[in-house]
Image (cartoon, rainbow, N blue to C red; front, top):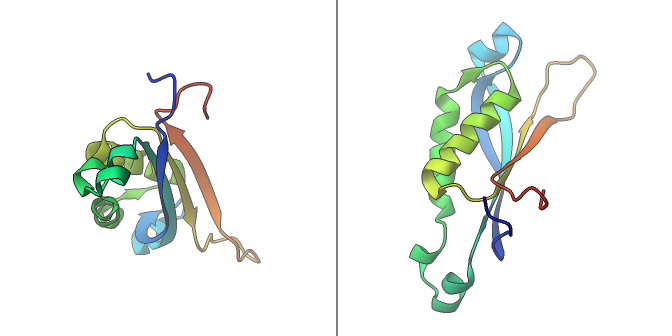
Length: 129
């Protein structure tokens, strides 16, 4: 495990996803809307200097891949859905430090109109979280 964080971070916010996630049977049957933010830490110096896409992370690949994943997922918890998101990001970018903030847009709780979410991190040096 690294003892430092790379000097750059790419943030992607408010990816709209549709997934079949929830404790209630109807949530898993009909699906619902989610919002996802993720961040990945990378060394961005060479990409900044040389203006070369191959030296950074193409975030469009992650957005498309996560949208596809969300259509196939069917589970009870946001935590499990976030684990699948981490796995997909690692397939694309390797074991880099990353954070995920996944929000359910319409939790089925009477009188509640806010969002409910989980925020998790992976591959961080133990002192950097």
